[in-house]
Image (cartoon, rainbow, N blue to C red; front, top):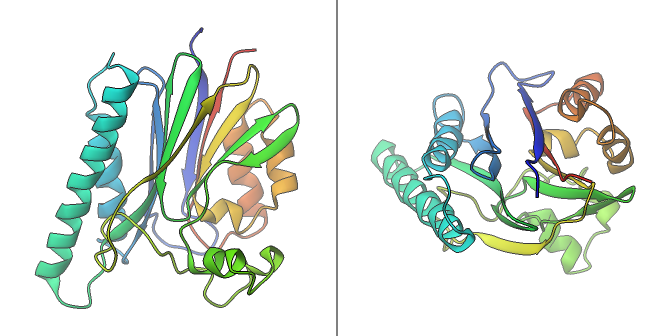
Amino acid sequence: MTALRSWSATHPGARRPNNEDAFIDRPDLGVWAVADGAGGHDAGEVASKMIVDALDGIPPDLPAADTLNEIRSRIAVVHDALVAEATRRGPDVIIASTAVVLCVRGTHFACLWAGDSRAYRLSDGVLEQVTHDHSLVQELVDAGQIEASAAESHPHANIVTRAVGAADAPFALDKVSDVLRPGERLLLCTDGLTKSVPETAIAALLRLDDPAEELIAAALEREARDNVTVVVVEVPA
């Protein structure tokens, strides 16, 4: 398969003074990721940067299985380091981050994640969510206690149930894998995008020439309350 094209962009959003998101855009490694830090200034951005820095150090030209092992082991090291640093700072300190990582080898992809940053695929004009949120509202939707349409406006919509650095539950990355479809585009994004731009608009913007900048602009036009980060990967037709 010929080289994949990718676009990436990040912005603090319309109401936040600092940006706790981070991303990695490495088509040469076949690895892309976004991370959404939590814990406030000098904490959330530390967590998200540690994740992308760890992924940035993956050796090139590894087989798929070895790359996935590197992703898991490097993020696990970051998780342990964040838990230790939060413990050192005090009993109520949180230094954590969501993470969603895309790895492509040949004609296949794998997506690993923790938290509510998402992966989507746009194929033949149809937008499909690849990941499944680790969040309180997603658990309520799964249990049939609320409708999916009510999730974004729920008072606890910002509570994630799994994150890198969160010490209150066993940590693990979920994973899905599939065959790449010619001409499709894959999107990684933080919830600053999905909580401000409806999926119908995301699907339309993903088709444009510079989808990352267009998605950021759409979120800002809707006065995104959170940081917004997007990475888009295009599979050759």
